[in-house]
Image (cartoon, rainbow over all chains, first blue to last red; front, side, top):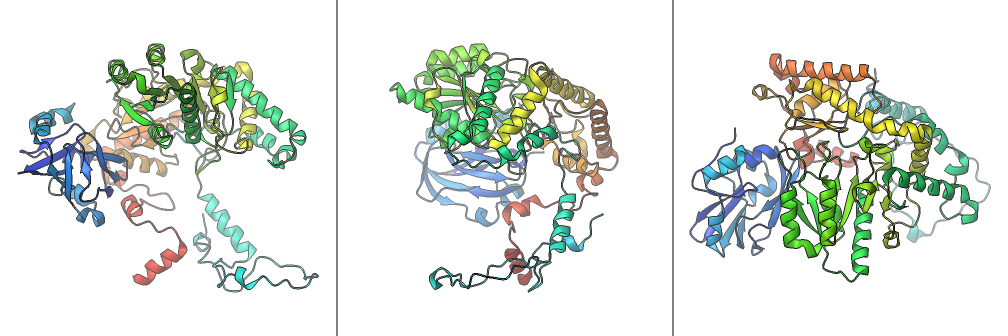
Length: 126
Length: 471
């Protein structure tokens, strides 16, 4: 069964964001990694790239499918999780422990449009 | 039983200096290749005698599985039988030995065949003209979208750069649109699997002026007939867009209804699927594109010749073998076979959208999810029983998609045999789940590690040798 983590904000396309001050750590939910199956490749942006809420910033490829990563917020990429380059399976092992990009938020009000954990649980149960 | 020795790679069977040929005495003197054009080291080719080569490839071919060996219910691929008369017709030297650069006055027979095939396809689809240049389905999609793009440009309607694609579409649809330089808007599906008309209306009211086309597969990738096509066509045409029909699932429509009559303006046909030519494993295919009257002048030139002519010959042989009356039976029989399997298995496999399907249907894995046996395991276990696996994990709308398309060719005995095995696997999932999870057991190669294969593929002999040396 998929795990859910409290205190994060979630998007309909199954990305989460953990906000710490002016930064947000973006990854895919445990539900998403379950649905994808074994992840074999993560395509990530470069540091200093701009991301826009609702737009693609990379892709996750599993043995089943390739899936776009949609940014839940707008801002600048300040760090990417380089460990995923060699070990994409980290997303399967611990999706919430392994974020994909760290973003400096340009518009924190965008967070209001995202779901809390209860709303996201309901979204997954649909 | 295959001999293991000859199952090795041809490079492993190589012995230095061994040859499978002998050249006649050279009566013309020696020609020195200029030093600048000589290779610096020998080509790394295997050296084997003829008999070893024959045994190696014959043993390999015995491991092959095709429509001629057994039931091949690969959803979305229409793996129908390839009648042998098609091969006989295509093998005639008058056609087979043609060269595309031959003067046209010496290829009139072949050109006549293309024209006759066009006439047949127009009659079957309700469209007015076809181009035969595209080499396969996705190439056809691209050609069709370029045709649409050319049409809008010719009218100075330069803002039309968006293509609406259902979320259940074949992945090639958005990919073709992107290659054509167009933007993709996804329209949602309803719970019953068909296009959400309200969502489409919303998209059209927001972006109507920039809609170039809507791409649809009918029946859609879930094998369900889209019932609101006339309304959808009216809505898209009302915005100034064109309707594109993805012909991947044309089979159940044959003889029953025609895309041209439903309001589609442009379509491609996968001749290799619907018209029974051999495919899978990379081709060859043919993706002719049809258009309604007036659009033919916007066909782009996507290849210098008439596509894969051999495929066209086979397709035309198929059409003539069946004839106008019998070809009408293709669709109804394909639909009957699919529904027969679906109804016989839906008590043990999860059927997310119940109701009449067309030529194929999708299960969402086993009904009993408590065993931990996945769609992947079921597919692998089917190999043990001598069946080709169905399409799995597509469409993406469900987590455990298992997509079955039997085609019209199979007898009731074959369908009953498949149903019995599918039920047995469902039973095994409860009584001996480990056996299913570790399947296949009866094939030359057992369960492959597809994660390792995707992350670290070894595709050449030299690479394999280097890997072994590292160990």
